[in-house]
Image 1 (spheres, one colour):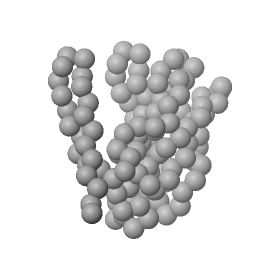
Image 2: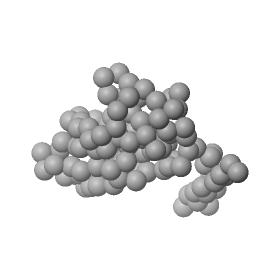
Image 3: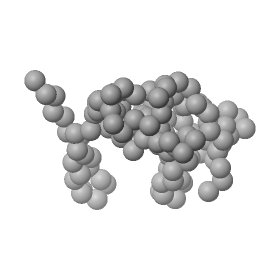
Amino acid sequence: MARRSWRISVHETGWLHRLANYGREPGSNGLALDAQGQLVMCEHGDRRISVVTKGGGKLTLADRWNGKRLNSPNDLAIRSNGDIFFTDPIYGLPKRAEDPMREIDFCGVTGCKRMAP
């Protein structure tokens, strides 16, 4: 039997948003605060590392490696110098290793140097 799941997000204004069924891991997982106190997160569904700024904006720090889309960023760690290390497994992709959206053929720990916005 196919598994169906929906995630409901309620904004502080009361606006409701229903997220589509996307694989097993549609949201964010690895979370850490950088030296500026901004929230850095791994986003499975959007396949990126992003930062929520103090002003409430959201910026993509990394969504590609060597020109290829990340698989499903999961966990991260930030060094005191700002370097970000993260894991990029496949289990957030709906068909995992066989998913046609998969562009990177390995999983593992990846590092990215934080760029100033």
